[in-house]
Amino acid sequence: MNYYSLNHKSEKTSFRDAVIRGLAPDKGLYFPESVHPLEPDFIKDLENLPDAEIAFRAIEQFVGNEIPEKELREIVKDTLSFDFPLEKVEDDVYSLELFHGPTMAFKDVGARFMARCLGYFNRDRKQDSGKVTVLVATSGDTGGAVASGFLGVEGVDVIILYPSGKVSDIQERQLTTLGQNITALEVNGTFDDCQDMVKTAFLDETLKERNLTSANSINVARWLPQMFYFFFAFKQLKNKNKDVVFAVPSGNFGNICAGIMAGKLGLPVNHFVAATNINDTVPQYLKSGVYSPKPSRQTISNAMDVGNPSNFIRIQQLFDNDIETLKSRFSSYSFTDEATRNTMAALYRKSGYIADPHGAVGYLGLKEYLDKNPGKTGIFLETAHPVKFLDIVEETLGVNVGIPEQIQAVMGKEKVKQNISSYDELKAFLLDAR
Ligand SMILES: *Cc1c(COP(=O)(O)O)cnc(C)c1O
Image (cartoon, rainbow, N blue to C red; front, top):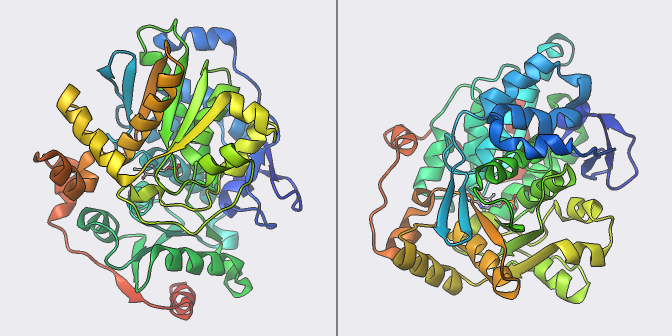
């Protein structure tokens, strides 16, 4: 499968090169050259197929012959080492729980798949061109998922930048305690500073032979496997006769963009709802037709504090760059922290369900759409385990959240990290670490 850049100034490239590069040389996001719907019989038969088979069939065309079938099936199977339960919350309202993986956030799926693809591609490039370095800035969840997904992958070094004092203790432990090929750099600054340093490094010609790549949803190998669980959700729905609506708490809009791609493949989704916190660039765009990115503002659903969602351009492409088509299949609403907290409390009171702040924003988006469009079945994505936002959840609900074993495993370990405070220090580190 070939990929082209959505900036249209770089040449087309293979899946392999798109994964190794992350971003196209013209700084555009890669997009698959063609998308072929799957057989209608496959969709009808979802209930009878194992998850690994569904996932393989969904991703196969996007990889093409660049990973042999046997290897790709292994990669898919390894990626899916945990469950994706669909929990009923109310009549016709379900939570798709994506937090049962090693770091308890949905990013485990994309990170595990991407790590295994890069590991495969590296087997035959080791001698000639040296290691690949995954460089990633995190405001919390990405770092842990990438660290865990890439741990021990040969030929790949991972360097994670995180803002000092701005990630939770659990999140910091998840990225600083693994060792091996994972290095954590604690940046004296904000998430935006981390992000800027990473971007500068990608543009720095003198770092070329470090083969830097990204591991956020810009990378096609992290973005596309996120389709898998939209299929798994539909598979688990008992009553498939009503229209199905998915609501996704969105920051960089990679997750929902994968859902829309699953729709392109033939998954019968009636409508998509992107729910955001007050970082409302996309909801505003749908209202006004003007896309104006803003600096991000801090909220309690901090993994969605994004002012300029990088995957929105892919979503526009999926709807033929036509705002009317987009609006007929896609809605987006924004919610305050206060509404989010109230909803977490109300949900818990009414149904005993504990949602994390991100899941609660997704639920809010779903309800807003269903109120206006009744008679449909709604599924919101619960993107992180409540324990990852322990303080907010406990103070909002007045309950104790038990600590799952994945988290207990990192609690006692020592944090190992280096401190940096400027791009020059990052660069020196990258040059040194060769
Ligand atoms: C990353 C993240 C999101 C946002 O996902 P996008 O693909 O960036 O839209 C939502 N919830 C949680 C818990 C996350 O970690």
